[in-house]
Length: 609
Image 1 (cartoon, one colour):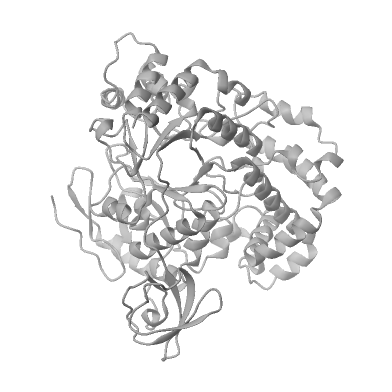
Image 2 (cartoon, rainbow, N blue to C red):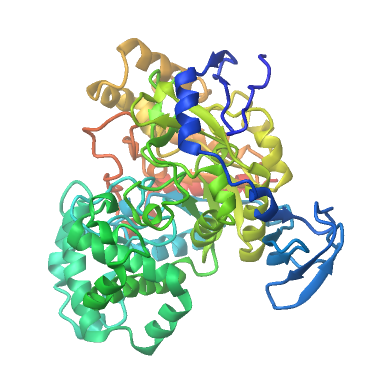
């Protein structure tokens, strides 16, 4: 294996290793460009940047007073006492610096018992009462079904909000914010005050008649009815109290959403006086459009109520995307922390020879520290809230991210390092407080040391039948085991060859490449006769999965009903990605024969160990 890449003082790696451990040098022009984008931190950053520590840790500061979260003032000298409280405190040094002191347990909360559960693309899980898209009432129904079946968790796609306009972003992995939810997921009839308004339910249900999830039509209908409910009811004192408790964070989101309705979903194109949350025209805009701002805040209140009802007492693992849209609300709020002129992506690999550009601007590491890690903390906390579980998409991004200059291809990027130990300890603190388990999506090329650091911090690894060469019985215990993901073929699609046919239609590879890929994946599904049915292939895949000793066993509803199309096919722009409804309605899922077989298999696997 080639040696560890050299990292400069900007955090840029001069080279990178591919999946075959071959080293590639980064062009000097790329390094120069990224250095310019990152810039140099202020000379006193190290004197005022946050300190992330654990009880008993030695500190670089000899003597200081700490104002704890609860208002208690404690003195520390050289080290934190073993009984020092966990949390976010403020440390005052004799030199006059006020620094955030983040005290973490160092390990995430984990359940003691093994569990199996369902992975659900919520937008796809429609019922007879849905308005074109699976909603939080449908999540409640799935959760109740899962509980009746003996499942211990549900894993859902990101529910984060997008711009509230036409041209709705379909990908759950490119939200406008990672702190607030998408009102498309509201069950309109269950919003407070809905009983006093004509909901025109038939028109809403008719949105499910089409073959795809039509987000634009759904949002237009839901927004119109929700606005009527809001003006008729307004949420009363309960909403007013909740809104006040949320403070400026909610106000900024609601303000951004209101401005979007008039000026579009990218704040860069707004009138100059509105381009910053503290801009000279923002407060007067809020005064003139206070009702619309209140409406968008009210939507989040309604979402909070329905999400709480949907999750009940079951673990619902929520998904944290690696980034957010550059024109969105989080980018507007945190523009001083974001890198300009660069996107996050991935280097070339066996699945994509050109590399990938995911379209999200990265956070500049030193600026993230200078912001006391607040953007990261808020995103983790909000996505974890109320569900008891978190899946971190591309967890390797806590260690390094592939930065792609906007004037180059994804292959012209470089890795930039992040303060991984601090970020992992923050995740552990939030997990401890929320009693929420954490899964890190560590698929693909994973550099040495990442999985070891995850294990040290109690973050579960993610193991897939399609990717692992070892027998499932030998997979690690501290992991979530699954067969496939939203980006990979379903079992039925792979077995029948229909997934390859669809890839061929969309030009994602040559015939030889596609067949080679399919043959490689089929090698992970031994023990099937050549003429086996798709249902038998699904059953066999879950028999293999049930052998895994992993803490969590995850099965997709897509596989359990024999769906042949995957939710998303990377590298395609002319496919209805993230818009394919499940072919079985929620009410009919419990009686589906293949799904019932999957339940028996996974329940037996968990109970048998």
